[in-house]
Image (cartoon, rainbow, N blue to C red):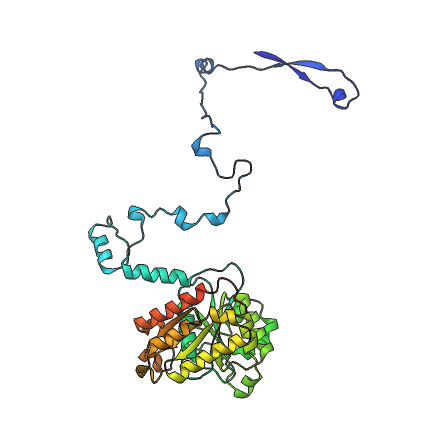
Length: 379
């Protein structure tokens, strides 16, 4: 079969002539039957139609936006039906699963679902930047360092990123004594060697680590040096920590007027104020909120979480509900920290040895803090 086509010559393409030559192009159609008759093997290829469901893809039409790789999530891609579902947690749920030879999966128990939901809140991810959370109070002995430790462990045990607690107490803090000490370095060493810290490995040599993956940076052990730890020093330490950690907790020590407090509050994305259960402890904690409001941190106060330590003396004769209601009129939420004899010893804290109610309170505090750090609070 032949057809005639009009083909432009090079001269015509250059515009130098109007001449047109016609060429005869032979287009031969081959009959498959004739090929088979000659002993050849004929392979028939499938015809791909543009409307074939198999070949439809998102973003192929003009004006469509192709999906980013972030859309390939586990929830979307993993088959979790039938026997592909995760092994259920809970005594009866797991027993039924085993007896049925893994065919009957009723899912997790109610308590396990509640725990996983709480962990999901703690694991809240942030779009950009490190989040800073100061833990402070105007009175010593109310459990501020203990609350910092519990909060840090609850977050570090669940989150995929890194969490560090910095002891910025100018009066010889004890935060580093709540975890196994793996180094004698302090905040002073971070300031001293800041220029030579090239990566996370260098910084990690200056901190102690807990089994929950919480990192702790100790304060100066010499009181004379502690007094010298000022605003500029804290900024150096905070800048270095922000290079490697997603959440930075700062144990601020007693009082709110020392020089380290200013940069701590300026960086704050969340806030935890610790109160004891006695009348004077509650009043001082409330006065801390008043001081913050008077100094331009109103939004930070509204986003604050009060940790009410019920293990302090006098708690058993005080109406804790009234104290809690007072703080709820000023802050976002209140979490009661129960008495735990293991914490009362004031030694190294082993998360696995804490009472269930203590761990639950710490997780609830961590979840509230994590949720409140989505956007920078400011003043």
